[in-house]
Every structure is written in C-alpha cells, then in structure tokens.
Image (cartoon, rainbow, N blue to C red):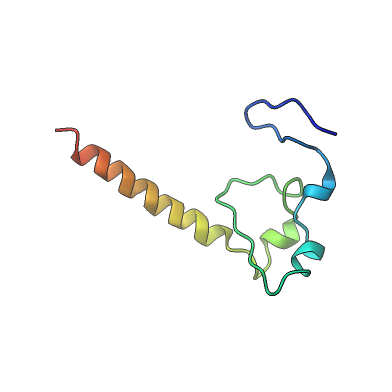
Length: 79
C-alpha cells in the first residue's frame, strides 16, 4: 500500500518496512544509524532507537558539527 508522495510523507505505510529488534537480531552485531528526526514506531521501533545498537545520537551530533563547518566556510567566503 503506497501513499502519494508529499513532503514529510512516507512512501509506504507497510509495517514490514519498519526496523524492529527482530530485524536487528538477524544482523551480525549490526548498528542502527539515522540522522534524526525519526518517526518512532513508524519507521523504527522504540526498542531499536533505545538499544545499545543505536548510534542515532552520535550520528545527529556529527551532523551538527558538519553543518557548522559548512556554515563557517560559507560565512568566511562571503567577502
């Protein structure tokens, strides 16, 4: 079941596309990354986001530093 694509809408509402702990347990100590924000219990289960396998906070922090570096370069080159 696909939905019409609009900004911030999911392409599908099929729950089999969600990342769950059952799927994570099929990996060889896999890690879950997402740059945030994420739609909890829609795209990914709370159990995955809150697990030791989740790197979402670290990834979001890295994105913040990267955005700051890009902004700094833009501002320095405005001259």
